[in-house]
Amino acid sequence: MTPVPAGTRPVVVLVGPPGSGKSTVSRHLAELLGLAQRDTDTDVETVAGKPVSEIFVDHGEPHFRELEREAVTTALATHDGVLALGGGAVLDEHTQAALAAYAAAGGTVVFLDVSLAHAAPRVGLNQSRPLLLGNPRARWAALMEERRPVYERVATLRVHTDARTPAQVAQEIRRHLAERDAAGTPDTQEDA
Ligand SMILES: Nc1ncnc2c1ncn2[C@@H]1O[C@H](COP(=O)(O)OP(=O)(O)OP(=O)(O)O)[C@@H](O)[C@H]1O
Ligand SMILES: O=C(O)C1=C[C@@H](O)[C@@H](O)[C@H](O)C1
Ligand SMILES: [Mg+2]
Image (tube, rainbow, N blue to C red; front, side):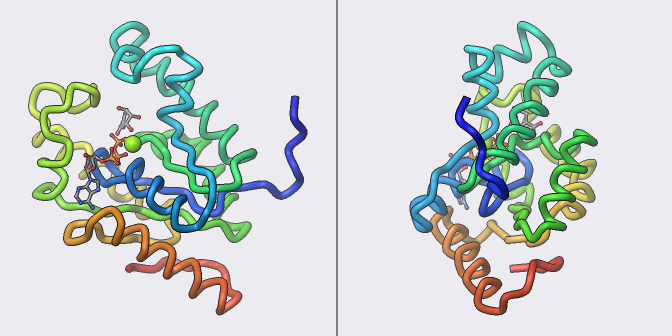
């Protein structure tokens, strides 16, 4: 096994609901910063050998959440680039504690915020999101109402994505990271 260098951790972690753009923005941001990109949904799919939607059908959501917790723990400890989490990863208490420790050590957790009006067309009727099956708009709205306080609590920065392209969102995050580095101060709760 390759030893993990002491102090290795992501440069930035993206959280938010389905369709907020975590996966897409993480790729843009990694490109902008010249860093590696990682997505815990992809890590879970690699471990399980099947897509997220099939894991839900074949083994149920609790099993998916166990694999997800493992994937988040590993990525937070070993990935030194841009990390996108699955939309529901922040619901896990262990993950909440891990993100709190990461933020307390100066890490940046970005909540990609989005309204229902903009999220609905982004997620559409895509069958790959098992939690939105049936009535994607209503299910997304209920899920966001329940989760918004959690996204806000774990984040050190909230970035609005409604009127921005994924590339613009990535640029906004890069601007924030550069400002923070120039100021030499860790993140506090901020809006951008
Ligand atoms: N700011 C944006 N403006 C317009 N479209 C966007 C924006 N961000 C993402 N999209 C589009 O929305 C869709 C969903 O984006 P993406 O898969 O990155 O979301 P996600 O947050 O990773 O969702 P999930 O939680 O399901 O993994 C993609 O087709 C993507 O191109
Ligand atoms: O919001 C959620 O709970 C999910 C979002 C996706 O990223 C996947 O992790 C899965 O579809 C569950
Ligand atoms: Mg994603």
